[in-house]
Image (spheres, rainbow, N blue to C red):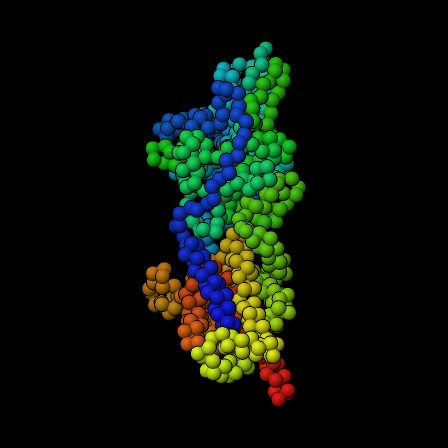
Length: 576
């Protein structure tokens, strides 16, 4: 019975890891739970809302080329550089100074936003819709007058446009030292009659981005609306938009935020005042076979601006890296609800995020995330020491009882029920719980998943080196046995990827297995013998940091298990 339980625990572990290995490979289709269809009050009948096709988006590339180049306002602080197009009021160039595309020396900086005319067009824009059908509002071709510049911390920029009908439109922008842009949109009505307009802000993607495509990572539309996390993948959004013949998602929320998330980057819109209610939409349009995407915010109803009055909307745009501590700071200082959930910590959020804090703190002490992971693993071992000691003591006892168990099986091989009773009596007499031997394996499962998430989704682990050939703990070990670790100029297929650290992990697992009591059943014994090989190939494509953790954990477990077994054997010998 004891071996069956242990085998079941191991089978469950292997099964879960196999599922991860299957789904965590690149180029998998998006999978997501159905997006919640939050209801929101519609605007007055006939009032146009921000749409994917409105605002002069029919402007062709040829027309674009015929126009003179737009004026640009530089955007710069210590962490970003880019520019805003004064035509259409678009933030459409943004480069992140702290991040390179690869670990190679001289690799280009990550460019997050690009103008709409490019195939990778990705930009933010602010504007108005004429809800009364007669007020002239700025569109994507409008050239704004600029006061100030460049846009930098402590240096706001004001964009202004006069529609010639008595309304003056303004957009005042401010940039903080990191990735947040604050925008106040105003319309001053100097005419004799009231006007009705709808201010909005949007983030637009001109193509479906290249996604990582991993099952455990969400990429696409994301937001927190009325305290609820909302996630819609591109595939699900396209299907939903087609079914509804409208937005893929619509919702109304006080505060909150919404936008597009990639593995490491985020663009998101939100109100400056968390009490402000806004409509949030996620839209898809197919234009000549090209998928275009939009996330937008707007007031729930148009503003009626009386003569001499001013209507306004204050919002923020985050465009940058999903750094844990930075998102935490924005959540606290700007009261942006659950802004840290832009990082996909998953179901084990309550474990994963504390794990990140612990590893990040150790990194600040050691200067190396790999060393931080090793120290963190050692600390976890100390934390679970009482449970592990009990488990290994039970396993040591089982190993000592091996000959007696074999004798019972021979004596009662034709009477399974009596064999079970005799085995239970033997366990009771020796004060051994056979099920406790499963604990070391079961305890590793949530730790493994939590560490996997930390390594996979946090940008702090991106391009973090260890020692030697490991230049990125979040990527698989690049070495390969099948080309003699680079000595042979041969690039094996992805299936034949067997790196050095996976082999180290397999060897440590093999020797650890030798310390455990061997199953008397030949079939079970064969399965146990193949386990190190199976795990070696399974973990070959996992992040190097995770394989290093597993190898180090095996070494610590072996040392602990060897010490407990020696102690147990000495105790038994003293009694004899």
